Image (tube, rainbow, N blue to C red):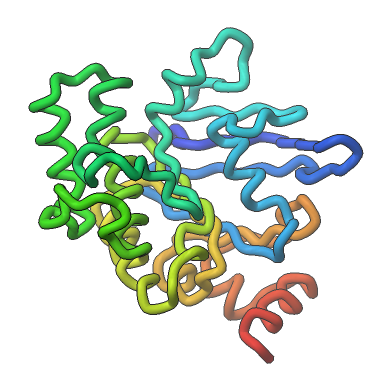
Length: 248
């Protein structure tokens, strides 16, 4: 069997901010169509690792490859690379003066240089995938937080990325709006999207992830299938963390 090229390979990633070492030689490999969930206490380096994967943070050392291409190499056109990496943040970062359709089609027009009609057709399709085709003309202020986050997801998937990175996508949402965003992520997974998710939504991790990484103090302490990590964690630190989030 031919070896399948990972979509994301982050190898021996170190990241320091001044004297503070946030990542201490972390490895992350994500196979095509895999959903990898990264959990761990605040300050464990989860979001920094995610941001190193699309060079929003420059690793202090280590290599990041996207579909086999070393994006940390000198002379790489990072804007070109970022087109292949969808990113969804905690805050929705939508342009308030543009409709949902405008927000989703903007990068298609500006970055991919698609004609307006083509970009808008593509954007409409992406909005449909997140269940918001009927809100194409609505402005961000007219949408709930959950709907705004789904527009942000539509904006990312419209670019047809190789991988989607989600950084705490539900943490700014009211509890009753979280479900609609997780539902969209479930659908993306079914459609074969490769995804890396940093989140506190443990139940979702348990239900949907192929693999879970537990990070603490800048290192991956434990990783494995959700049943193992949640059901029979090996490390004391993992056990303590899961006990704290489960309120035991």
